[in-house]
Length: 517
Image (cartoon, rainbow, N blue to C red):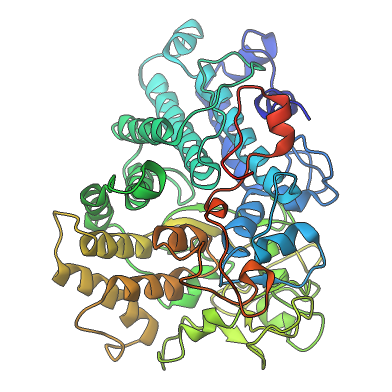
């Protein structure tokens, strides 16, 4: 495998910037918009050529769905924690549960390659939409302003992927539109990457559209605010202890909350149905999936089908009559968060045995039916094979901002107050209970972590949350199969960061492996 930025640029099937094809494609605003759609599409598809192919150039990829962004990211964020466990007899997956992965793990490599591919796609669009490119093509005035907005959206999508790479790998390779296609990128340190992402998100603020001024699945100012809030909450993870930016987290979470075009969608379960793109005032940014026009065996098709068996549950009740994959379910620690929460309707579980004594026995551990392919009226949308799903995946939503605000205040962030923080958490609980019976007068930091678990489970947050709380590695908090034993045990602190894939270390001599690998 060659260095990913070089290989990804080859896989993009994009023409050199000065070619006739490129100039024709980018000769009009509509041409730019069609390419922007492909930039967004790289998040929801494994390949623009069909569900059986992959854009990322990785060996050992027998199922292209495993290189889908959401599926690859979810595996690393959820299967490594107390929220999920998989029955598939795959050493790459089982090492996630056991927290024993190595730099040769293919699933780690798939996410690494996917994220860098999406950076490369963004870089190409940003390169072709520079001011001098627009001027040379005669695109001026309002037309140029439209393309500049598209460019800001692509810059956000690139910043998001760099945040993912920083969170998972700490010090990834780094290239922007200023670097020549195919060049071998240098490695960037987390503190420098943090500063870069921060500056990018702030710089595009003036150019991005206002919240809800464009389609539901497009980047707006609120997406930049929300990603900044999330990143500031985790600043000590990336920059070191004592480098907290909790006041900034309060500030940017408040910007989203203060925009009255956002509110909580009710009931909670409707956030995760196949028509969640309709009348949804809560989602700030999503990845859209469609069983007909965006076929992919990753994404929410993976989340829904992998949680169901071939017998023992009514798959038709979740809109996947042919979709039981006998894969993912919860460890007992996830449903235990709801044990003293009678009436909390966010607990969407099924099954008879919460304990997992045999990881490869799908019937052990409670099924998680949070995501569904049904509509809010109980209809099953068209699917060509009874497997592919239409449910969109929320990347950023309002509920998270309530939780960011509350935790940042509890950690000392200025500009907020405990009373408001408690009110925000109670808003989530009022939706969950349908009334005020679950409200509390105050919440501790540990209460907020538990509330994040109840509100955000299976949405790709848990690993990052446990690291921030000092509970992911070490032995202060264990869960079933942590460290490879049924009762759980302490694990080495090196696992708080994933290794850069070994093949990339060989291909790119600029890269240095993360400590311990």
